[in-house]
Image (tube, rainbow, N blue to C red; front, side, top):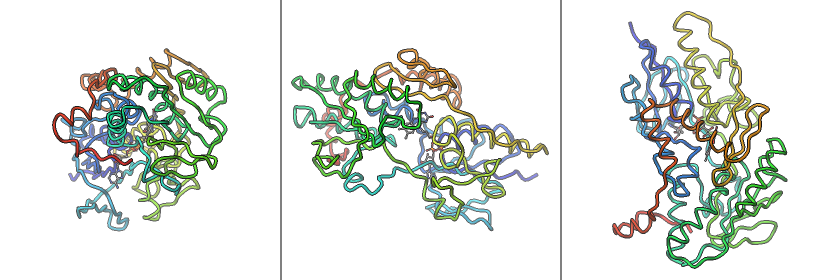
Length: 405
Ligand SMILES: Cc1cc2nc3c(=O)[nH]c(=O)nc-3n(C[C@H](O)[C@H](O)[C@H](O)COP(=O)(O)OP(=O)(O)OC[C@H]3O[C@@H](n4cnc5c(N)ncnc54)[C@H](O)[C@@H]3O)c2cc1C
């Protein structure tokens, strides 16, 4: 009997979870197409940028799918033929499907602010995080003093966790490079009048207090106007800096607009109660217009949900309707400090940080057996103490790192 061909696009939280769950059922032939060979554990990327181990934010897809029946293909999906039931990839593969799951994530959006794309750093990918870390070290090596200001733009979860981690890391590497002691300025800029504008006020307040305590200066209600090679324009005044990190904007993957999907006002894809856009095509995770879209936990939940329904259908059972699940929100903001919102419960400080660490272990375990999950989790507790620039200088390959400032 021929197997039901399921093609999944995107090797992130949603796509990988769907593939793993479906692979337990031998009636399916599963192909996972992803442009990257690694699964990116985004919640730890800020740590990779500030001296954490790469293993904490990146897992090879081949490791995750070892000993499963999932066919892995590294390629970029560029086209969809709905009538022919196949997708096309950048190298010309045409892959037929009986069911298609799309989970291709979001893209950074610079909102056409002049100079930002050219001069700012980001932490959306492993490469971004490494580039930022290299820049921090290189600058200290070149100039023997810290930058005038380290500026993080965006008072959302990513901006908060990065700004919270920067002061300590900058102190550490300043000492490491024997740079004379100076005050380090880390600024966090947010256009809304408070951090995390969609979260309860009390949470924003507590986080703001904690960040200030860690040495971060907050610019709230402040919109960025432009960036040049040496400064960021804010309120018609320049903030002198060679280290500006943009975390403030994402938009849905343009694939959907280019292929006539129905979009909601926020640019996400409209889905029905089974997360379908049309019969046989499912859109999940960050791409779908669901109440808690934009969170790793939601993408994972969606992947599980769609896989479960496909198995139900194969068993001649009715699929279940989608019930959105409110995630547990965790916002790290400084050394061993996090704010947690778990339903009505609020936890702040070291205990919050401990919960975040436990949640990471559970998340890694969702994708890997205990042994491998523990290895990645333990890597989070470890740090890279060598300077990446000194190492590459010693190896004579400094030219391999591209500086953009
Ligand atoms: C820095 C950062 C920190 C975060 N921290 C948290 C956190 O602490 N907690 C939390 O819940 N959420 C967090 N998030 C959000 C969370 O990571 C996302 O909600 C989650 O990754 C969404 O999963 P997804 O499967 O929809 O997309 P993704 O995980 O982004 O996966 C999409 C995949 O598709 C691939 N792809 C894209 N286009 C194509 C194509 N055309 N062809 C083939 N492959 C393609 C991409 O390379 C990627 O591998 C964070 C996000 C960032 C950027």
